[in-house]
Image (tube, rainbow, N blue to C red; front, side):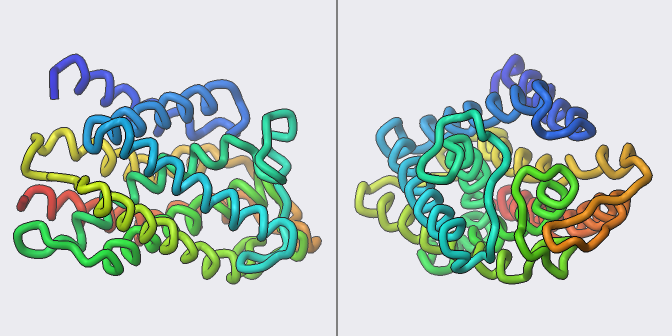
Length: 271
């Protein structure tokens, strides 16, 4: 990776951690999220080519909008909820358009982590194994950020609350639907004869999505340290302490997203 790009990425990584102390809908977090999405898409273009990168984005977004619209309309898979964030933004059905791009960015990083973790000898990968690993990595991300973003910041509302800081357990089980998206991506890439060739590019290139996934987990530290005293009430009327929400997010990140990132880094170092 050229030095200027390495410096730029290091600044982005630091910015993700620093801005996390602000509410998600403040301008700076939104700008950094947009930059991150562009960086991830650019990485996908370099790794797979423009057409395959667009296919990856299209599949993740299409499946995301399908299952999220089904979920908000019926409560199926996830539970009863609706989005509050992005009310003034373009929507696909009931879902803000930006959600598809955010899920693509995180999904791409999760897929790379899953691909590295499940790669066998000579880079051979089971489509089901990488899809399961990617779906688990995505679910870990939701486990970390959902209670904070819904119960504290109110970006979406769970109508009946839930045991995990106002989020129902069915939501996290529903996130395994992402296995369908990743399986579709794997089948699409194989049909196109495209693959992530870890040996063809320097390790620093593949470090980018892993580091972004890691940053998403570590970004919970600043809100925890800066969390105000007080409490919030979820959709079911249950009261939760704000500090507890953020402390739990950090704990879950340290036990899920961080180990997944480190394992992916370990496997990358051995490729």
